[in-house]
Image 1 (cartoon, one colour):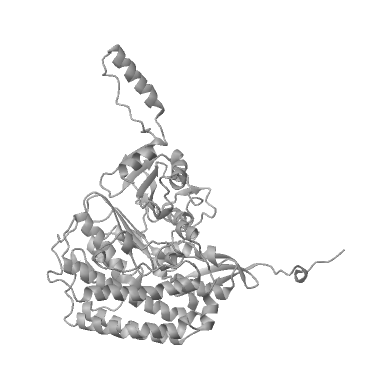
Image 2: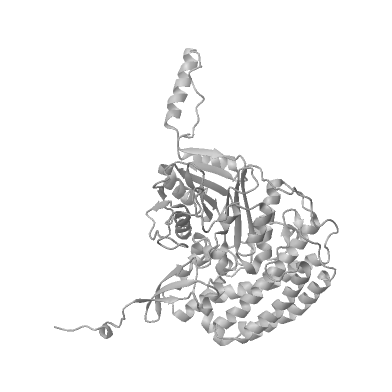
Length: 186
Length: 373
């Protein structure tokens, strides 16, 4: 499946409630021949929930709001046309102001790849939904992200430090982590 | 009132023991917390981090040329393939045109690395289930390969032969001759491996039907490499996302459907033959040309995200780079095959005996620095 078709399909799961309204307004305004300056071009995909991008990456990137994240992921796995059953990479990223996780998904049936990103602005108590019940591999990888970035995964069955000791202070892979003894800064 | 004892119930209390970190069957500093009931395993919980060096954090500090040298220290048995993964990421991001000669040599050395890794695994596999002599036979053949690597680049294990843009040095004049000699030698040795271990009745009884992994679980747990292919899950990166000269050679993906320890053993033995076939197809036709293209002394990747996957001896290694356009990566993640393969251990070992766990772990072929990056 090409990226365009994927984008259209995934976008259709999150319809824009404003879209019908706006198109009605457009239809109305065309009928009434009122000036169109106030009408924005409507999109069928809800821009507040999903954001698609293919810029500067070889895959289709989807940025999703944390609230819709779990729904999107379970749809991606179960939908007949997508069937992303192989989560091959799960990466925690510190984007400066935001913390987040990047999921690389592949379908072993259709052989297409998609990248899902979810971000949270809360650096004190970041929390996202766990996907361990969708892909079993996520259980270990989420523990790794928790260990190094301090992102809590809701509903995770065994969320504790994986590599570091329980009494370790801070989250080393965050950009603002400082350890004057162990880190060599150039 | 009737008194019930544990003997009446036929049960003992489950209790926890440590397997490792200094256990010969864990092949490195891996600590497994086993919850056992008698000799039946109830739960396996890996305790990681004994040799974690935080390579990903070090990468954020280092230049791309330096990062290549860190990757040797992850999965040291497929060091050359790890190097290649980072080099390919950088080259694809810079859209460098790599000479055919480099691609062919990289593929040959990559496959030789795979043979070398499987030789060591075969020796250790036999040793884990009680056949000490296989260790010496495996190391005898691996020694020939290590000598070739040493002559090529000066190192026997952590090779550092790849650099972004090509190879550090051209191949040694003896290279082709010695590789051919090795292939001829090794072709007579795999049947010997089969006679020694594969057809051994005790070995077969120890491994058949032990640690069975289904195809669905293999995909869900993100398992890759020979472990996944033994469950009938076709996942060879060399087939689906060919890199270097792998699109020019013919080879079969080794698949088995049983999913048990013996199937994983057989897949690796089959892979030895396939790797030799790939080397044979390329060794006579190494194109002439440059062994390296010039790159800037300071490599800066354009702003963006890059992902490259390669097939190491253990499975799929992924390199994910987020670049902001500076000379260091903003974030670099290694998706290591061992980490995902380890996560399946609890799933397949529960219900078995401790002795079976040793056999299962031997065919998962874990390299601990690959898990503790």
